[in-house]
Image 1 (tube, rainbow, N blue to C red):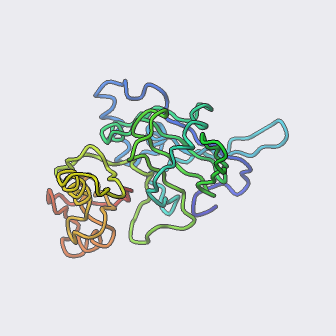
Image 2: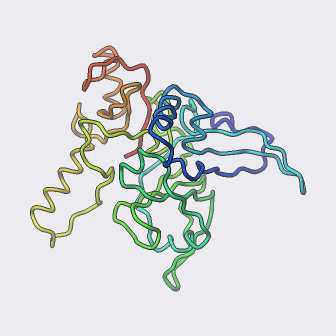
Image 3: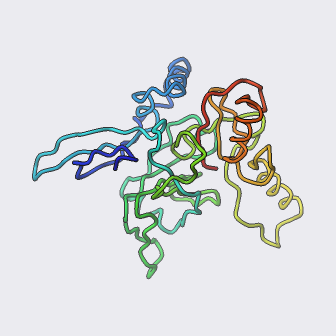
Length: 269
């Protein structure tokens, strides 16, 4: 509880989505929100990304205890993934109205259209007859869809809330995809590549798939996946291990723009 900043006397919690119409705000307001979020303003972060609200319930009464935004929560919630989403379980969630329109410009730029929070230990029903129920995450999870809930997409993924920090080298944990921004090193509009390429695909398709995969490799070691975003320049170019090397060898100067960064935030690609 202390690590995730959850009140000890909380008995229930819920996930709060960002307000509808956030993407319809004018450019000046969007810029202001981005600046406030980058500066670590918890109120704007909650407004832009949503968060968890914890409360204590006693019979018919409840008391709101605390609202937690996911970004800039030091030593707070961390995520595991991405994992390939099982499309057979989308329809049941959609019928419940669980999928919400993406409101963040950074997610829209990646091609993500809908997302949903899965409750801890929630058993999901399949749209395929006689399929077993599926429990994707004991601590809860976020699902991201690249098309409407009625259409499956090969890039659809979900992230689970991890039991313990995924890596100790990152100074700040952030929500999956929450701070992804386009940069000179990331030219693809999609952050996820397919898991495999079938033998029936053409050579051109295989080459394209490999290029997409390489585009998300660390620019320093060229082996591990990019895991970090440098603040305030917002360039994504290094894995967790190499980000530490950059801090030590380059004295915290971004290898792309040479601007000095003050923080290293975790992203999930």
